[in-house]
Length: 307
Image (cartoon, rainbow, N blue to C red; front, side, top):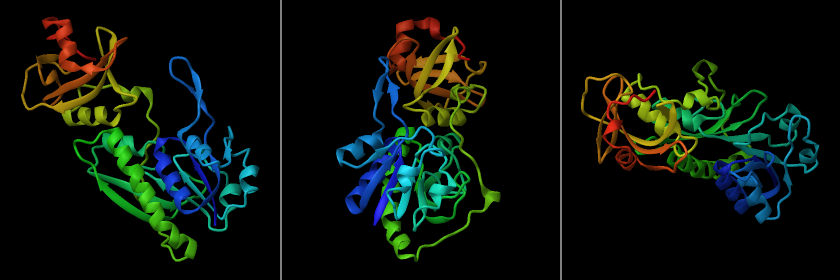
């Protein structure tokens, strides 16, 4: 059985590696390489790196809707996608005899879209999971084949939840594929009335609003850690925040005001209490412990307002 895999970031790597170990992967489709870092070095996508390591043909169309004939020419029996990043055209969806299936990082129909892990954390969800689904022309609306959930812990951030779901995606796909190949898999239509959406994070969503509750702020900070990082402004200079904790004290102060500095971190007033900033990156500096940063500034940090 010939498989074409379509994916781009680190999240898709375990899924691709699992397919390579168990099936014949005849081609890999990934987004075009991008320039990264201060020196803007053109860098292979993570999925492309895996394909090259295993001498698998790589295709990187700029616009898949206009450039898919090379994929069809491979005559795949099935196409598997995972975090590819472009909408697949109908001609390609109709090509494989076993269809096109997708590994999606949410419990559909909840959190359709490109940022389901971020939004699961931002929303304060207690659980999320992986859905294996048939693809159709709309975004994440195809029939569900299998699902498995995972608990979201307070200790989770974007990185840890990403890694758990990536491995779960590999495991569930490998468990599900035999039933698809044999034609006895489940096929459950999604209830569009229960659908929610997880569109890609915009720059304005990365800003911390201290008028929100401590829990909402805590969820935002961990949802954007380690990248891109949430941020606030102090004296019109950006401070990124990567780790926080919900404090248990109460203060009379305006939202965003720094009310205390302890070895635990920088204590900031919120709408319903206080949030302790524990790891920060001031503008132009490296990521550092918040207490060390505050000590470097001195007592004058008390009373400043983060906006």
